[in-house]
Length: 222
Image (tube, rainbow, N blue to C red):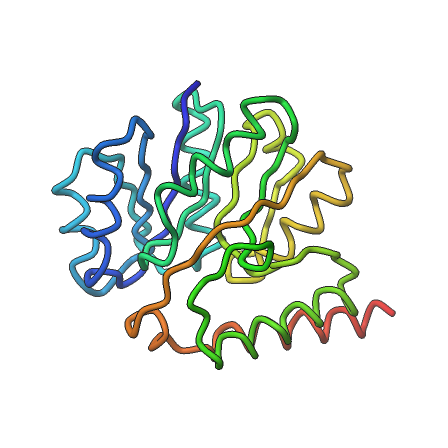
């Protein structure tokens, strides 16, 4: 099977080399989508034996994932994995999330930080994720244990049924909604996430704006 790992990257020069180095001893095919970074993300990524795609305008993480996913499918991918560029995710967890797909147990597998394995979740992050989970369960009616986790995998045959349109962070909730709407077989599996000063220093305002837009949309549709 051809396993393609799609990594959206925006201003990740501090961590992208570390992330890509961790994949060097694997057989996964890596696709990095540089979302018009203002730093040396693309320059650093180009030094690795990967597929590097570049947006000429910053479109958002959801758009970068869409670009990388469709490219991978055009190259004959069997399974797509979405993986963050800030070194939060662990390469060994890729095998964990693709295993149920290879065995035929699921169409989609979602990583979860809340299913038995402990991540070094900082207090602030715990609060944010708790609120996101309440929001997802109460308003969006999505009963997932970790709705904002970016580590996921799916069979390429179901791509047409997971046709997310959100360009920003709202793609996470949209993908979950499409999984339920289209009655895809899915599993959540425990993973660990690394939290470092670097990843924790990223602004949360874009995600808060995204949450507000989703809330407003939900209210208007009631």
